[in-house]
Image (cartoon, rainbow, N blue to C red; front, side, top):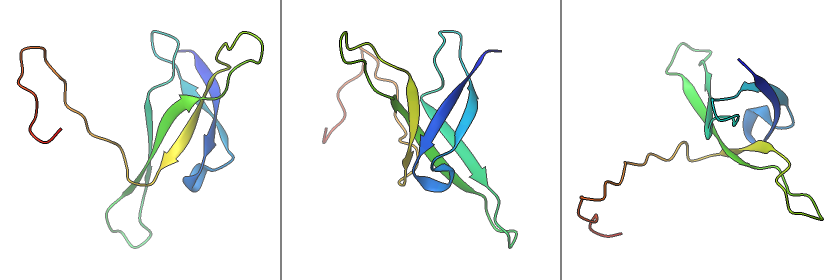
Length: 91
């Protein structure tokens, strides 16, 4: 598998650059979760990071790569939106 060194911003991994495995399209996953065990033996705390563009070149605006930003609220859960489904109430 191919990997890419990806910077992390915010949360417990702030400032670290870790190798992240790339998918079949050559992109890292949209979400990166880090389980942190509790010292007292309690439940595991999961920190979530969202993939965002690292920046763009000045002349052509080509994307430079990816980085992960910490999301304090955790991972956003979404459901697939099928074309034959009715729209959800309240959205």
